Length: 201
Image (tube, rainbow, N blue to C red; front, side):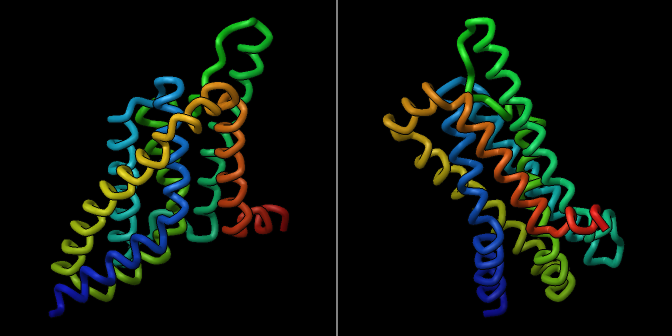
């Protein structure tokens, strides 16, 4: 009974903290299908690696060790902003040189991991007290539930990013749309974390 309760709580915690990740995954899979980058396996591996980092950091924090100050974790929002700006620069250069534009922003495994961590940085504040209160055994069960749900999230993102009409739009305008989405995601992270206010003060 306790294990079932742990599974339900873990599923609810993951779903509640990763709804916006569906958008990121959809954009990544669209980019993969429209421009060939990142590779599909890089999206899957990057998502698993990124969430694993968040879980490990949360577990360490649950033991009373702080890796990064909570007040400044929102600075990770600069990662998708930087990737988006890089994508826009590449699109402008391609246009100026009459080259075929690409929709890719996260072009490899490392950038997918970075975006996953940045987009889920606020998850640490939810996972840390949860791991602290449920103990080692239930924490392992929670991690296993997360692993299963990451696969479900990737499948959902892949399905949402598999529509031909959407792919056609991304192939035509994705070199502007995809960087814009990443800049928007990063900006939201920076604003919602309150880090901009702390920097200005």
